[in-house]
Length: 86
Image (cartoon, rainbow, N blue to C red; front, top):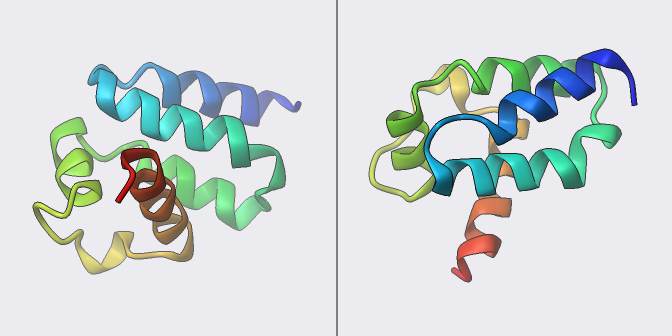
């Protein structure tokens, strides 16, 4: 695994909110190696979102702003729903 993917996986598992670590880190484990540069850019951008905001989006408490509603976000969202059994 290249350095960028290693760094992103590390960040995904150490967000601070355990529930979010499990979803985002689990997604990273399952999908990072398959993402192209555009996908990696989108994932890196998603990791800049504050924990509480991202958690609210993934739990359908709030709708993410348009800029974050990307193909990658939809993949993370679907992964989150499956992980929660929804």
